[in-house]
Image (tube, rainbow, N blue to C red; front, side):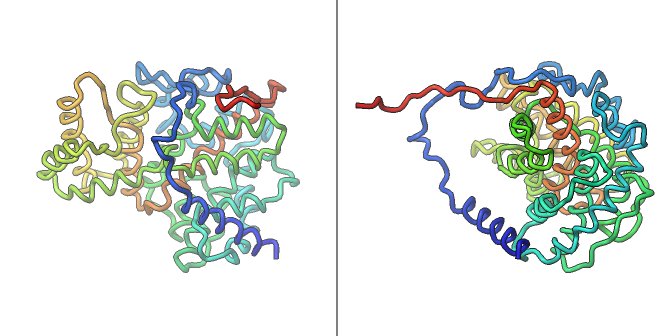
Length: 385
């Protein structure tokens, strides 16, 4: 009964969101503070985004020195070092335990309303996940999402979920649970590189949402569910599927220059280029581009993507010489994940899976302040009387 009610609620909520009208620009009131751009809302030791110089630092280490050089679990341990999580236990072992525990909730996902998306099934599984066992909450949550992602995808495609193997690293087991077979080493290494690359990235919308919820002393699960809700919005980023749509539309390297020129003439945005913070190249793009070498030189879509990147950067420089627009993380996220066989419908669920340890870290850091996040607003409506 509870499962049916929750499934119905999620489906109705999604329907209501779909039916919501887009904001009318004519009725919107200009407010330079509406997006909080430039407002410092937290102090953190977790990550630093230097947009002017194209640098991302996670607890004193540049992203280039973590991604590709450390397993996902080691990078998470580095991010969580100030918090008493899992004691001295190796995170690979406790994440494996968490995956085994989470698999007990998979029947709930199988019974859920068929119209639920993979992302919504993940939310459903997380909502039902018990947090009173021997595992720390952050471990239980971060370890569960790979299971819920893989199981939800297999359920949606009419296949039986695959039980986790607690002896494997997270990236390897996630691919195994998706496909039913151990992945090639290069595929697991490439996915591991992606998961580390997206682990944390300053105070973006979903991370800020998690901190706000955590500041109320709500439990960690509620904060992550709220962050997932923020991530589901199309303005958040982290959903690079449209990059593949662009690559598919171009089709051949010789079409790139003309296609891009026509798109810019129509004032269309080139997917995978430009970033709200970075005024130079997104360092994560280079980390992921380097990860393509793990997959060998024979992927034609990878070669096409590189040709498109070259043509796009040249066209953007000509069209907007005063506004640097460089390759962002979404471009090579799309190329890399597609190359290892990840369906583009899973890009946002996979982003949530990799970002969850970062969300958890921000909630725990916010709790250490003992402060409730409660900003003020400026009233601009009519006066009474």
